[in-house]
Each structure stands twice: as structure tokens, then as C-alpha cells.
Length: 226
Length: 226
Image (cartoon, rainbow over all chains, first blue to last red; front, side, top):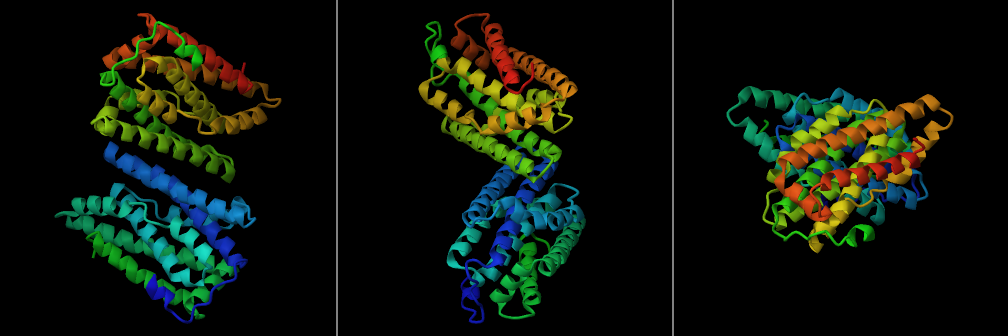
């Protein structure tokens, strides 16, 4: 966070900027979609402990969803209206990245959560303080990392073809996420301005994506995926 | 509650009675299963508002699940071990009552919640005070009634064949629930003793089921189903 905050080129958006409603709407729909995807992917869980762990993550996502809906209502915005523009893009991302098994589902949830948190870090400098706090809480750690890293590293032990397959999977996830992020930026002026304000640069989205990619690679490594 | 509490024949079980772990295990698995079934049935929701409402109910079920797991751990019991005996019976109930659409899913969730709350009312007198409080909180209203009654009554308006179909569905749900309750009573001595202590009668389960049936019928009527 401190790295981002010290960037002198960032501009803080006014509190009534339309990019803030759009950001809340995107995050809210993202959390609701994540809730349902996790619940669906739990069918891959090998045991009751796995199903419990996934339900816990999904419930945390729903809490974040409620927080964002509350923040939208406080701004006089209707949550459903704010979420609606992002349904197609989020569904598109999930449809193109349907996991084929337990480990792919875990890797997807973990990398997706990480990307969302990094995105927040990148745009935080452009957000008014109260908005920044809502977004921080909505993307805070759901306790997933420890569980996923343990499961994936345990499964990888000595299984080289599995590692190669999951590495490919992780790269595909980033590719699809970047594709969809570019759609969002092209379609939602408010969010595009928000990114511009945060990066202080017209090539802001590209720079931001490069940084997200670097962090994504670090997370892949933490899973034992080169 | 007062009706049950005033019954002088009820015996309060000692705090270390095995029926209490079994009750917590049954309720915990029931809430976890309900969480996943709701998430799955949300695929029938006609719109985003329906998906949000169902996710909210599912998240409330998960909170109750966590409460019960905490109570089991405080008793020195392992939640997974306590839940395991009920997996087959709960899966059997849900497999035999898979809803075919949105209204069937809502009716099922509403009637099932009501049955669980009534069951607690019936056995409350046999529970030590701290256990009674945990069970009360684990079965407390998730805010479902208002939503479901509104949706079902709205859909029924003027649609007689639909009302007939949903009435049949409601009766089938009760029949399956009673069948599974009899399996539980036959297999779990602790829970059977708990019911006996609550009703003070060897024919306790039959009497209890009669009362649950009467309340079930009232709930059907509140949905507009004769």
C-alpha cells in the first residue's frame, strides 16, 4: 500500500465521481458471482473438510457483497442497477475458466482473490478515504491462502504432469482476466477515469496490468507452480 | 415455546448426554447441506434479486453451521466426526426432493426451515439451558418467510394447476422428512433418548410428528396452498 500511496502522480477522485459507483458495482457483482462459483466448485471437494472450507470462503464473499451493497445504498445508488453492467463480463470470465477439478477450482479462487486485492492496491491512491476503507474491507483476506497453498502443494508433491497442467491453467486465468478487464475499461468511462487518476498516466491500464502480472507470477510460485 | 416448556412430563437431559452431540451434529450437517442446496437451487432464480435473496439465506445457514461447530468444539467433540453419521440420511432426503424449479425450491426451503424450528420447539424442554440457547440461535429465522410467501403467493395468483402441483410437492416434502426422521431415530440412540426425554412418552416420536405435521399444514396455508 505504501508504495502506491507515495506515488505523487495520483489524483484523488471527488466523492461523487461515477467511477466509484461503478467500482462498487463491479466488486459487488464479483463477490456475488464468486459466492456462487465457489458453492458450485465445492462439488469437486474430496471430503467434508474441503466442503466446509469452501463454504466458509463463499460465506466471507457474501459478507463482502453485503458491505458493498450497503455502501452503494448510502450513496443513494441501487445495488442491482450498479451491478447489472458487469453481469455479462463476469459470466464471460467464469464461463471461459470453468475448473475441471478440485485443484483447478482452488487455484482459480486463490489467484482471483489475489488479483482483486492487487487491483485495489493499485487504484487505492485515487479513492477518497471512506471509499478506500470500504474497498479494503471488501477485498480483505478470506483466509483462503493458507488452505489453498497447503492443498495444492500437498497434491503437487512429485506429480510433475500435474504441476505443468496447473501452471498452464494459472496463465490462462490471468489471460482471461486481462481480456475482461480491457472490456470493462472500454465500456465503463467512470472506471477508466478512476484507473487514470490512480496511475496518473494514459497508459495506466497497461502499466497496472504489468504490475498485476508480476504479483500473479509470485502467487503462482507460492503454490509451487513455476 | 411456553406450551412445550409447561409440559410437566419432560425430563432435562444431563449436559454430557450423547444425544446432545448427535443433535448438534445433525443440525450442523443440516445447515451445511442447506447452504449448498440453496446455492444450487439459485440457478432457478428468475433474476438478480432472487439470486441475492437466496445467497443471503445460504450465508445465514452457514453462520448457523459455524455456531454449531463452535459449540461442538467447546464440548470437546470434533465437528466432522459428529456430522458424519448424518451425511447419508440428509443426502437421501435432498436426492429424493430435488426441486424442478424456482417455486419448488422456495417452498422446500421454507417448509424445511419451519420443520427444523418446530422440531427444536418440541425437544427444547429436554435440553440443558445452554444447549437450548445454541439450538435456538442455530434455527432462528433467516428472514426467509417474508420473501418466500411473497414470491409464492404472487406466482399462484389465478394459477390453479400450479397451486395443485405445489400442494402435492409440499405433502411429499413432509413425507420424505418423516421417513428420514424415522431412520435417524432408529439409528441414533442418543437422539431417540432426547426425543423420549422431551415428550415423556415411548410413543414420543409419533406424537411429535403429528404436531410437526399440523404446523406444516399451517405453513402450507400461509403460502396459499390448501
